[in-house]
Length: 107
Image (cartoon, rainbow, N blue to C red; front, side, top):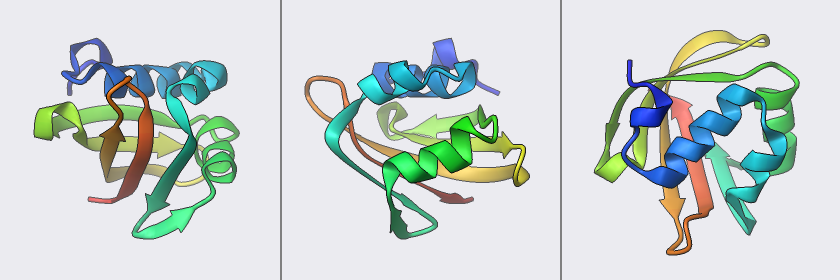
């Protein structure tokens, strides 16, 4: 496993740290106002999805590996709804260090 503080991409590192720390405000500050996301190939409403899949279900990311300069991760993701699952995460990061899109799904 890769510890969050060892992740290459600073914005992705902050994203993982915010998720694992339950930091909704810090997480939201990392996102562009028009951020988009998909789960298993289907676009989702970011606020609804993150509330359900991360915040209210105690979501946690344990990073197995990273690629593409740290913008693609393989993660053991767990929450109280689904348990633990191996997932992929891909991030589009703007020049000012914010996430404009993230995609996740089963690995």
